[in-house]
Length: 280
Image 1 (cartoon, one colour):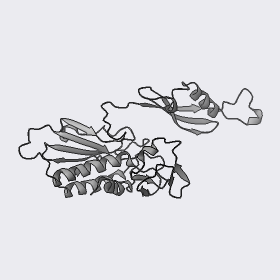
Image 2: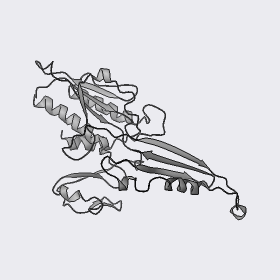
Image 3: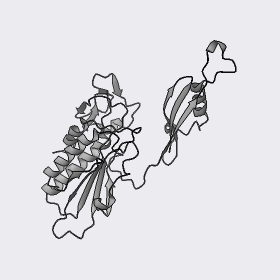
Image 4: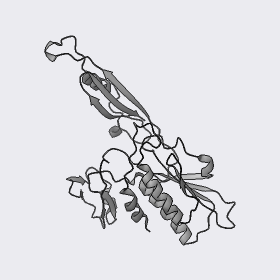
C-alpha cells in the first residue's frame, strides 16, 4: 500500500486531543486509531504489536539474521490531532497534477491562495491532499504514521537487511503531554526519529519548547447607567493585559529562534474574563 493511501485511511478516524482534560489519553477516540494500527502492524508481521492502557502503541521488527548487533533504530509519530476545527467527519480531497494556482477547498467557500501561501507554486505538478475546507486534515501527524507503516512494509517486501527497528505511536502530542508516559526502556532503541511535519527532506535535531499561562480576570459589574468609579470591566482589563505584551513578539512577527507570545483564546464578559497565552 502506498503511503498516501494509508494517510487517506487514517485521517478519517477523528482523534482530536483535549488540552483541558485530565485523563490519559485526553480523549478516548484516540484508541480507535490505536487499535486499527495494532491490527495493521500484526498483519505486517510485527507480532508483538500492542496498545497499552494509556493509548501508546508499541511494536518491533526483529533484526535480520546476522544484523543483531547493529544499531537499534526507533521511529515515532503521534496519533492525535488538534481539537480546533475538528468537530465533525473529515473529508479528504485528492488533487492530482496540481496547477500551482489558488486551490478551492470543496464547496466550503474557502481557498488556499498563493497570496497567503506563496510556496504553493513550487508544488505544481504534484498530488495534493487537503480537506474539503470544513475541518483540519490531520496530516499532523498521520502522515508520519503512514510513512512509518509504509517503511515497515517495504523493508520486509524488498528484504532489506536491518538491525532491530522499534516503532511507537503516541497520544496527546497536541495537548503537550504525549511523552509523559512513554516507556523508553521497553521501546528499546539506541537512536530514534520522530516523523512529524516540516519541509520535504528536512531533519531537525532540536525541539520546540513553550509554556502556557491561563489568566482569569474578575471584574465588577454594575448597571452601566450608574457605574461611574465603580464598574471594572474584565474584558477591557484583558485587552489591556494583552497590550502590555511585546507587540512585535507574536508569531506573525517572529521567525527562526525568536520567541513569541501567542494569544490563543479569550472568553467571558464584563464580570469575568479568561485569557490563554502561550509563550515560546
